Image 1 (cartoon, rainbow, N blue to C red):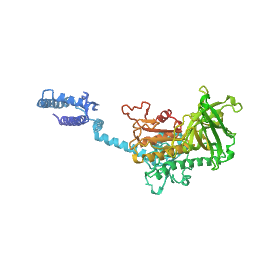
Image 2: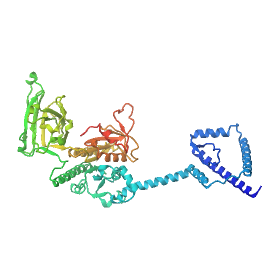
Image 3: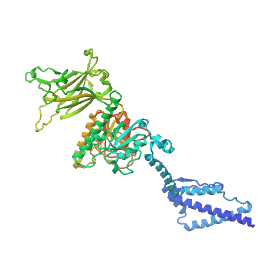
Length: 607
């Protein structure tokens, strides 16, 4: 045999050995990962291995079948392997004598090495980690990108921002109160990712850690308990998201943050809108319209006191003491509507024909707000709508309101008025010309007086301060993150809820478009992983991710269905047997679809 033939034979033998070694390595990795390799193709030119994923049980079954077919003949298998190896060596040694085999090409060796590296789990893990680190570096750097550098900076970051951006966000500045809280720190970054200009109200900016907020966030020093420090904070802001909460259970701290803080910020935003309107020589679209203000005896002019009955009972009227009512301006400077109704089916009412400015009609407003006081009776508010020239064609619409002992503000949307006659069309605020407040003894709830004695439900006292029309709008101006009370220590739950509810009431009375979110117990976990349940009525019992609450706040800013609504939200759960809540519908969070609109469209407003 010539030397050339020997060299060719040696080279082929080495190549065969390398191929068998690579095949052993692939076979080992396949068994380790639960992968069964297919039989090698007969064509020697194709060196690419083909693999498929099968269950581990199938792999073990095939291994046991091939290894134990002879009933424990391990030695027999080794003997057959020696015979096969001898036959292969003989064929390999004979093949070069007839026709020299070409050496493996570098491309084939590269494919073999690449195939081995693909099956290698260490290589897969290293490569996936590199890809993840690169994506995360670009994503995390978005919070530090300034608006000026974004135009001529990283194209990938700009593309990612355009994917999440909201068209209305470019011209909207949002003031975040509680930006360093559990929800606020996520909320700030979500707002920036969508293109909003963000301002953060911080009590002590000099004590803020350098990495607490992104550099493009404008930090404003201020305290929610100090109204004078909030003027600069609301400057240039169109919307406010309030997710701050008191850090202690002290009653004074709770009311300073949860109640007075909300009240001060709503007043500061209203004052800022009014200043802008004065600069434009006009009226702010968020300002309330004054219908009546009772500050002097002259303000009572035009109001009429009337008496009437729903039906006449001749027999019982002989034993009734009748009814009486009066409307007067007292020495203490209060306009008081008081009296009693002992007649069965009787009522008394206070009515006036409205006189609106020439350029104002009630169709541009959302409802009415009354600032009243008294002994906690309920009343019927009646609006008369129709042609003012011919009152015989007018139609009556009513809504029931409840008051508290002491002073309170009652918000009544126009959508809550119902026609007295069922066949009449819905209320058109444009045609309203007369307002009436009626008291009737029926449907009154017993209320204990200060001394504990039950009051006579047939007597009443109503102190009137003002009546205003609430402005209408399509979007929310103020988003408040409250709580349901779940997860709060029982010893301080009542105090916390009292302060939270007081803040909610002050927001509803402000005239701003609001959204009040009451999440369940907050959890530190990724958002968008579980379905959400939106409900009204304090029935939820599960927690929710902080990231999901932050996402709801962002989506509520430009969602018309979220305006003037209060709701509870938590993760989807399976109710206990016998306590199923079939009416609770879960909604899947999705970036592409706005899940908030269908979830809130079925909920009631002004609740």
